[in-house]
Length: 173
Image 1 (cartoon, rainbow, N blue to C red):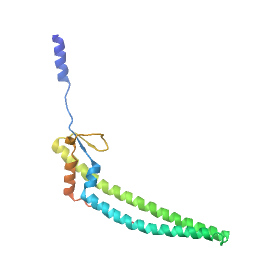
Image 2 (tube, helix red, strand yellow):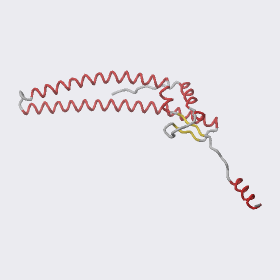
Image 3 (cartoon, rainbow, N blue to C red):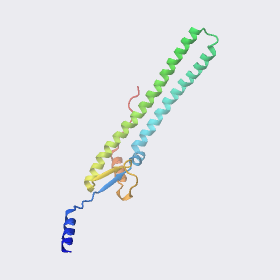
Image 4 (tube, rainbow, N blue to C red):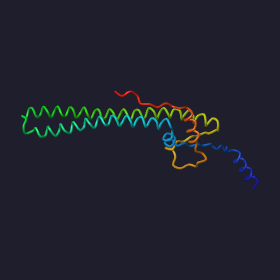
């Protein structure tokens, strides 16, 4: 019995109980409530509205040209008709290229500005974790459920708002 107690005590001393302090944050919640990001989204939506309006006009012209082309099939010679079809297909291809370029431009701008915010969040998390002795920080994409007591989203949000990050669209070509 004495040996069992000694082995038990040695086992207890051998195990190093070292708990980790964990925190979480909700990136989507932070970014959607951030004033500079809201302003950026307003700027982005105005830009999209203008550009998509221009593209809609071009699309309407293409639709009318297609209709004219179909109606002229009977009137035009085959060579002239094929030439017009080729011309129309080139215009259509250019239009699709414009749409794809615009979509890529919008996507890139969103990613650039979100990465700018993410870099600041990383710096803030680093500061918070050093101040509070936090060992591990998970984003909302890395966990399923968490307690509000370990969520540091509010602290991150407050520190981000103090920075007054400027988010903007780059030049559109």
